[in-house]
Length: 251
Image (cartoon, rainbow, N blue to C red; front, side):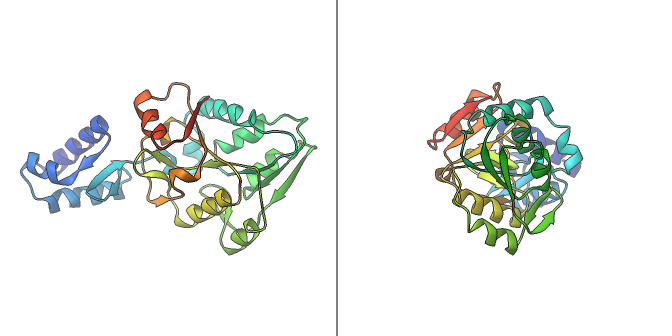
């Protein structure tokens, strides 16, 4: 089988089964495991999948650049933001992540809400500029343009001085076995610190992030208390999340 046809076969299997295992595939195709692993490495470089031990998982479209991500499921992200905003109580200290879904949370917070929002995203801070009853605390750091958020030592130091009630986290991927992952190592470190600085963490995940994997783990399932997903998210996918004891909310 030609390399191009073999790779297409692997993609078809990934779309059908949600994962690839190198050993059984090598036996089925009559090639060595090294050949399959080489194919997976090349396909991962092309952004077609994410390699994991023994095989591969689907890659997330949320790994794309900001303009691309803004065009993915905008109505769905608005619904997630609306559902998340309803969970914020007056007087709370809220940490709001950066990204295209969390900005929808900011847009749906009531103008009359009196609360404090901590964010490392300048986009979130600007979005909240007309919420005169919300105190906005910005965390500094080096700007990571992919997500328009601060990262680095300065951001970590500032996070260490915060004790929040609720953190709305955005990630690139949510997978029942791979967990909560993102595409940049430093961003994963910041998200982890924000999670540890809050009494409660709820993850927002639109459809393109479900049942996919990215290179860097953020936190384990035991460290979050909830997950907000689209109303039409597949029951089979949600069952995989619930087995970890996470409360799943549909938007």
